[in-house]
Length: 161
Image 1 (cartoon, rainbow, N blue to C red):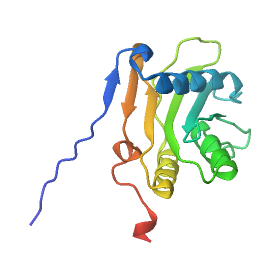
Image 2: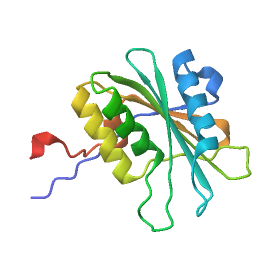
Image 3: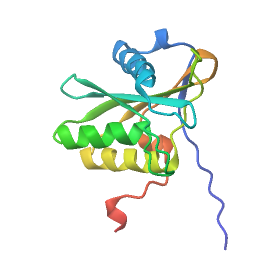
């Protein structure tokens, strides 16, 4: 017998950053600012990520490319690994991801790769609390998810080991 199951993912599309909470807006703008420090001389695809920890501090990460592909690393993972190393006892409350092309001011729709989604899932599982995700959408809109599970519904976790 084959059972057909439907999966629904709930997320919000916010028409502008002004409609976000103050904290969400600050994290989004910090992620946008982070794109200025991205090292992407090969793709010219500048990715910035930022997050808010439970102690109120905010942190940034950027993509870091390398001439020897695939030796670089995405913004989300540089951010999460750095925060995980330096603040292992803090909870990640909000994380934002933005992207733009070099020499362009407007931001493109941001969407984390599969590897970054899995790392986000690990950190959410590790802290046993949801991480709210903010991603730059199209035409100045913003995508808001309440949990990494909304972005990666079939997460691989330690419970499956």
